[in-house]
Image (tube, rainbow, N blue to C red):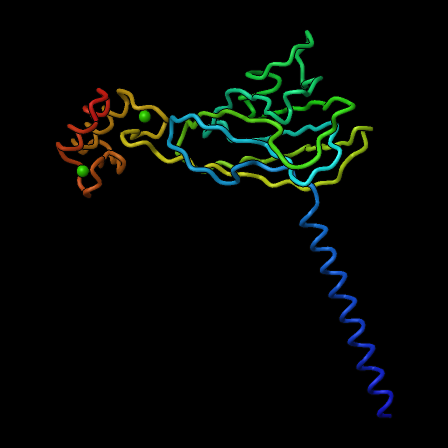
Length: 235
Ligand SMILES: [Ca+2]
Ligand SMILES: [Ca+2]
């Protein structure tokens, strides 16, 4: 009876050990698997500002071709153009192309600012597949409105030099757009509409908390003075 109990304990220990080892190997494997990601994962910009993000690959071996689509909210961001990086400047067959076979890094079909999609693909030279980690592309955006925007990677494909798929995972990014001082209506610009809104808020005709430019809890003549100075570029 005692012997049986000891055997059972040893068996339990062995099974636990094997399970732990399997989980450890799976974790290490998952940590080392190739990743296509937005870099930086989180960024913060002022409304109206231009900024650049990268789409990176990490821990890749024998990368011969790649593609991704990236979605964004068009009311928050405007995509302006994409550019090759030192990693991909030798790439060819850039896609997608228009009906005349031309690749446009700053417009459709690469950048569709109506639906909020950036779509890029290219091939590495057959004799020069890429191994390691680096940026595939940079994307230049303008921040239009103060909100949070997810940069979602989808339809991602990584392939080796023989066109076989490379399994990978994706990491999305996000951008926080902060309201610029004086951009009362949050449209990414400081214009006469912002001046008008502060004056209306001062007169009590509209309620506009962002008209409180000096953040002192009241909308008074100092806020009116400030918006006029900001508008004129004097503040
Ligand atoms: Ca504005
Ligand atoms: Ca105030």
